Image 1 (cartoon, one colour):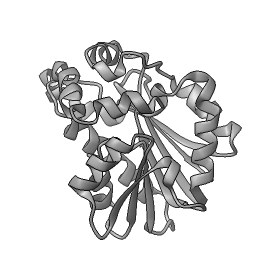
Image 2 (cartoon, rainbow, N blue to C red):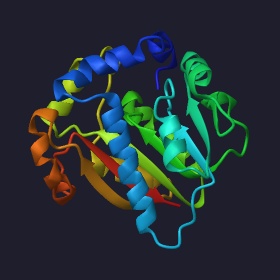
Image 3 (cartoon, helix red, strand yellow):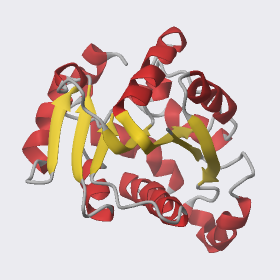
Length: 230
């Protein structure tokens, strides 16, 4: 991840993101809550899995999603990690609490681990040559028996490409397809357990969203999630 670039975007991250998402007719909160709701359902489907006590929001940016994770997983201590010190400072000033904390990735305490590691839209900001190292970091952060929930923009969806073209901080992004994510996860010893595609219809076609659960394996949603286990 390009730390200096994201330092420069810390103050106007939300404005840039909203500029891109406006073509969908929905806000960033709509997409964030949709992803986390899917993650909550997927966690609950695995019978016998206890509630997570520790959650890491990897690449948390300015922290907008971190409190949603704390809300949806109410027993967990949630740690937001990001390479950008300016993003971490802004996240901490807005959302830090007795259950939510933030740190730069470089300053994360040795041995930090979690039952659930969440990341969204992180890998496309990592140069392809550097991606194996990031996946190795994810494997080191998730505790045995835990889950990595990785969400990314789907390069096979034309609407996704349009949205990203309108966002300045995505100017140099290199998207990654779900099969490549699964390969990277397997390479670091994680077992991909589930892949689902999300967000097929913009707001103008919201009457069709009842179909989305039936389309979740069709690789055309605007985003996808790959859940893997250790």
